[in-house]
Length: 198
Image (cartoon, rainbow, N blue to C red; front, side, top):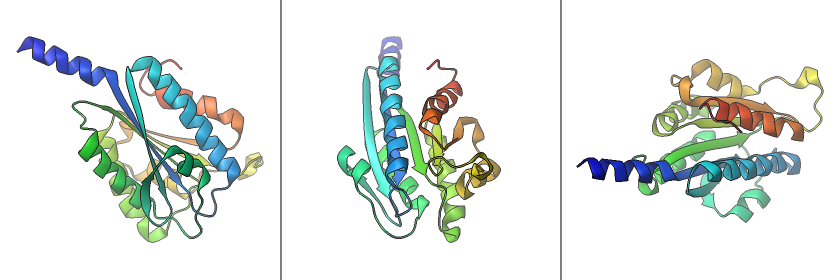
């Protein structure tokens, strides 16, 4: 019995999945996609130093969410509005079906510019709390406008909403990224919450 437990611990310790989510609505331009791509590249690279097996699942969303491949994730754009809860709902389904937490360390991370339909905010917070319960650490990165002057660098609607209303903040980290130079400090903040050195 002891050996079986040890074997399961090893399997759990060696598997990690990144659930990469990104708003692809009209307001997410090339700069914002570049920031997200840079962050995910370094995040996966860092996790590969900690785990033997690292997978990444890509979810793009506007008013609806869908699982896509890496190329689609970083190149496709959609017009229209944003319903953040659609991404979290799909992420929870994918985790439940493919990445049981007894076998996987789960790291969902969502990039957005902070815009969301007001009518979806309560559901987004509720599902973010659900995600936090199922994962090692849930991250939200809010990307500002390139070169935004400091007086415009305030948190958008979603980051403020999460900081004020999430119930399970101990496994949540929210970061604001306005420039390319902000990517590495954001990574440090994300993994620093778990006591990891980046």
